[in-house]
Amino acid sequence: MNDTFLRACKGERTDYTPVWIMRQAGRYLPEYRKVRADMDFLTLCKTPEKAAEVTIQPVNILSVDAAILFSDILIPAEKMGLKLRFLENKGPKFGNPVRTINDVKKLRVIVPDEDVPYVLETIKILRRELKVPLIGFAGAPYTLATYMIEGGSSKNFLTTKKLMYAEPKIYMSLMEKVTETTIAYLSAQVRAGVQAVQLFDSWAGALSPTDYKTYAFPSAERVVKALKQTGVPVIYFVNDCAGIVDLASGAGSDVMGVCWRIDLKKAISAIKGRTSIQGNMDPCLLYSPKSLIVKEAAKILKKGTAARGHIFNLGHGILPDTPVDNVKFLVDTVHAWKQ
Ligand code: CP3
Image (cartoon, rainbow, N blue to C red; front, top):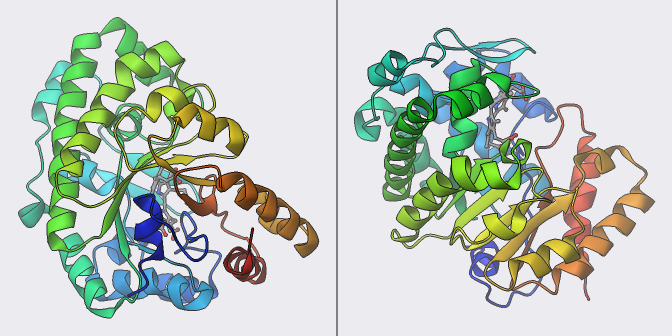
């Protein structure tokens, strides 16, 4: 087993900087598109043999140092009671978003063994087949709640913020249920065999630092602390993190995942040695000439040596039409890099 990724999570010395790519299983890979041609996205997530197959694709094609379970952060919300659809190229939609206290009361905290057996089965298949560590994941409670309140993706998160500001009790009771669900969901993933977990706080950066502290951080911290007790490394990824990375890195995670809008050196000094770091290349750089990819990767790798441990990654998910050859080139470049 290649444990370089797990060692870097814990801040142990490694022979090289491990790398994986957020959203590494996906549409930029022709092999993924071939599997997807036969079934819609949610069916793929719920068919363990196929979900396992697409999880393994990038490990074989790119030689990354970790696999991430193929699923989606919105699946637990569906099981809490929301009607989920993925419209082709339009993103996710919930038919009955959460706006009132009655909407919150109708939601249930999921029981993973009964509600998401296919996720746990996918993990079991993967553990038999993989030679690199398997990362499980969930949305951070705030990020998941934005989808549940907005009913889909959003630009300004106005409906979420209106609820937060005008009806804090409703917002907080929703967060309570989402947090309990997330803890149950990730704990079940660990019992099924994942060797690390990542909490995606993709939209936390839309909040002011004060609002992040009040409305998002406490629930993320609760999830991190609960998962720490399982013994697997916990990665807390916060997109658009420049204004809140100092706060976010106090959640108690083993690794802080950062986007590209912050200089890695600044992020590392804000973290003050509390966690390892993961990131932080702009996904758009993968469309640039190889000479620039090498140059930018080297800058990040060099800065990363100041951290407790560094896991190379993009600052957010890979884009759907990224040239595969450049992604392979990036992974090889990271692996070959020496200080
Ligand atoms: O390879 C991996 O990283 C594992 C699989 C994974 C998916 N979604 C598959 C997916 C992971 C870790 C996620 C997390 C996720 N899902 C997040 C957090 C990460 C982030 O990017 O911020 C969020 C916000 C979602 C919600 C979501 N799922 C949206 C907004 C969309 C539509 C946008 C898009 O890219 O199409 C999805 C769909 C989705 N999730 C796809 C994949 C591969 C595309 C589905 C397809 O095949 O058409």
